[in-house]
Image: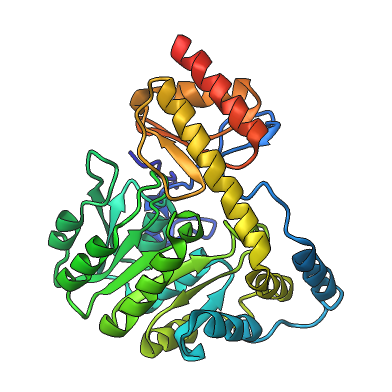
Length: 369
């Protein structure tokens, strides 16, 4: 079940104060970690526990010294750097204040009243919020028993009114990854006039990240309706600055730029993202640390008797059903926050070894109870 904000409805013209549009009352509330006392460790937001590297910090400092100036209109230096690194034309790249903002602009351009957007559920909880903001209807297709996208069911959910299908791989919060063959198969099944948005926020943490990146980029030529969505918030450690981008055909990218606000990527984020993109050693070190911790924590949870899916992200999914709230409380008792989804499970961010140890202690105590 999704939590929905409660905003009283009034008859137009009878309220003494301004009232929002009716759809505002239908929007789910983005969840947050529980607890009233700040925990010692955060394993709830899929952030990097490692600070940016020295070259990135130097770029941040230099840019901040000129923050009285506007940034470039469309994140131009970052777009140019991404174009070179990915081997695509600059006109195919749109940068913005995080991949979430870029997705909102994409849906603004292509969805709207009378349309619908199909995505797996549970998946990233911002999807229904962004879809409904456009006036479109969200079509949530349940995951399989293995916590993966039910691709045949998603393809069957596409109608003449479908504007987009969103695929999240690795999926947040379950961590499951779409195989290359499965991605190719669903791209063939989806009509060419329907957007297929592949959200790759956690791509860098997958075991074959380089091959997966090249494979999805290669698919752009054969499938002009494909859009790749990526971010600097996770593996690059810039969640607090908000930088992300999409890669798509030139016509799609042009439509997104048309609805994007000018100067949407701030000057500091722009400089940090360009520097982070160039610092491949720091990226490799972060990814290696996460993969090592993910494997160790997965093995520890399994040894405790928990059954959880393999993850390609910087997090693990504990499908504990109705025990989600009590497990979250047990983690808070160990001064570590996790993300709980009522009646479904708990997502645990991998990274800090101390935080991982605290979560493991909490799981052991919870199982003992």
